[in-house]
View 1 (spheres, helix red, strand yellow):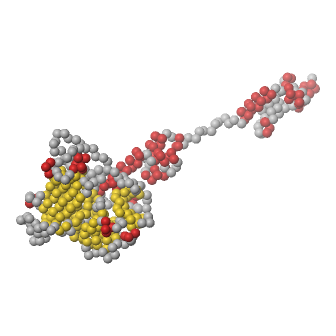
View 2 (view 1 turned 180 degrees about the horizontal axis):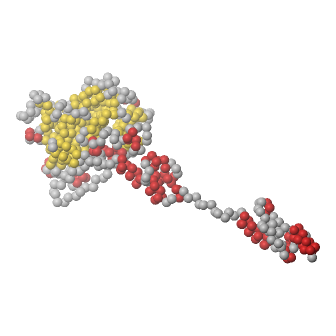
View 3 (view 1 turned 90 degrees about the vertical axis):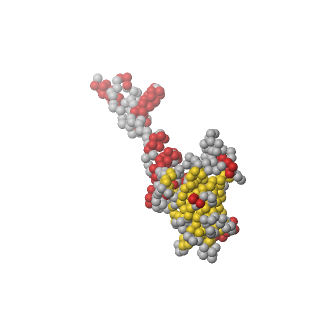
Length: 483
């Protein structure tokens, strides 16, 4: 019995238990053997391995093999899914990005294409620019009267220190081979309704090789740059005006001269000063009216100027002379460094019978009413300067015109250098015996005519006639009329 039992145990020990050697993959992968369970008589296998393999069902062997592999090879804990900031919804990412400053937004936009589009969201940048450039209003004070301007934030330049908002103006000279010469150093002169900018340098390119001159408004892309005054960071250029410099002396108008320079006027208020001896550039000067100046200096591109929003006329079927009355004129006459006249003229009107040659006539100062004749403070002249020289061109000045309609909205605004021409006719006024000078200005929207008399006894000029001529096309487009 013992022998049989021992023989049975030896017989059991001679063959591996079920699930160990019967599965060829277990030893190869280095898996531990399952615990041994004593087998009964039915588990005694014959010593003939070929017969045992033949007798073992293939389906059972594969099933057990698969079970062991799933037990030992399949991890019990699956790895967590990759959750990061990129998987967040776009709305949440935009909310997170809205708390970043401008420099951080630009850095985030370089991560990937998705972040680039989110970091360029208009709502985020509008918040940044609104916090840095808040529109302000200014007040004109003249003759103890106050008139509030309607200026979309541009007249606030007069209330700020130069460069406080980071806004500046540059000119870019391009020669005939395409090389650009950038002039940034400029002197600014702020007046009631305009800013005069003068660029001077000792390194001007030769006039003969220049083809164009472009005037840009420049503002830093990063608001923090305006505080540091750095010009090395990224900046946005907004095209304000472009001029042709080829054949400058033949195609432009000479408005004045002194012993050293000659002044040539180009359209849109630009003056180029040329040395008399060398006929080369001495300085460049321009005068910019505050109306829409901030928009023109920031909202354009490097190649396209800012387009003014279309005006929607406010119709009036009750007033038969709608658009002909209640104009207000603010006039500044200055020479960049000093002011010769600053005043307002209200309740200007034009009768229907006075409409002629497609122009409305608005008379601010009449020859017949000597109570409204105005003296100028000092002798008109346009001052200039370079790194070495200074001068003053007589009988030239800058005229700033701001005409408001009956509801106080800017109707016609410009700032331009003009000259005084000696008239050949003698004065017909008994109160003034002296030489007569006239100033004329004209553009697509209207004309200005000024008549002055020089009084030798008191050494001063008097404005005896000031008339504005408005284009009927401009009036009809503005008011929706048909004059």
